[in-house]
Length: 381
Image (tube, rainbow, N blue to C red; front, side, top):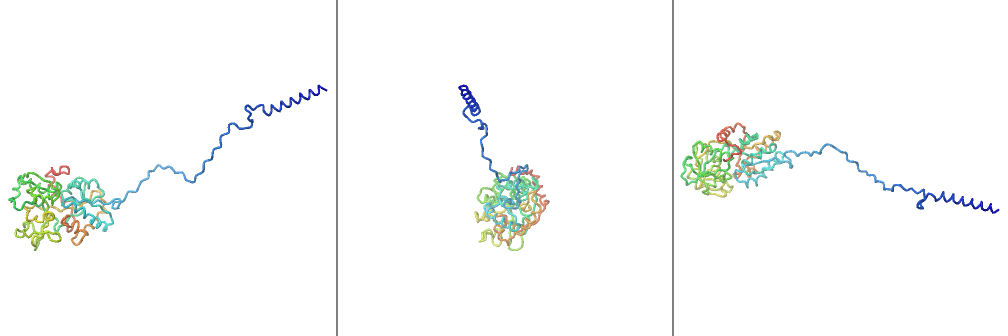
């Protein structure tokens, strides 16, 4: 009996040992064996987006260039600084407006610092520039980069003008030869009437002038004589208006002696000597020198010179030229108040009309340029 009880007890111990082994024998740190030990952490899912992905491209984005004649790309209009620069700049807006109204293009008027600077800018901007330049400036610009003529100015029926040699009225100068050693004032080395023609004439006559003064403009040259800073000035000469008939080249260039004391400026700013209206460079200085005719006389004139031009830079679009030429023909008139207050004014270029002109009209000027060896680089040397 005792053995049976002992056998039962031993059997129970074996069962308990087997249960203990199955439930806890493989747990090293009292952790359940069915717990996952290397599961990755649950990370949040990336939210989807509705924005489309940008497609890669190999082509660069090219911005459209503005059209010539637009507000973003105006046509440049350059005037040489031959007269009253302040007046030219102030009245430039009238020219911009008139040309713009007539053509639909946008223009930008400016006055460079010199004749040479005007030529350089026309050649530096070959596709978009109009220059109002004299014959010498045109020849140099044509040689340099192929600038082309558009129109020539007309002043009271004349499509030519002259160099006037201006001296003090009480001076003893009677001929150009008398100017040997004299102080010479000229407007700019790029001026046709102010420098090219007189330099050629002095050379042909064998006259060696003394000190030279680059005055900066035609009016300033005349004022140099008026103020006693020079013995002779060279500047443009335009024919006077006579009481009867027209002035001709066989007449004296100055007004008759018996009307000199009557010279005065009227309410319109015009210079009259009796019934003679003065249109030469002296008429441009009456604000500073109202008695200029009483103090300064004309010694003599050069031969005829082609009038100044409106010219186009070499690559200016042909399809735009004619509308601009037509607009200028319409604009330049003494019946047009906008022109009277700008380009037609005596303080500006005193244009009264325009005419066509061709490149061959400047062949005489080319001869003088070649004879004197003038280039843009050695102007005035």
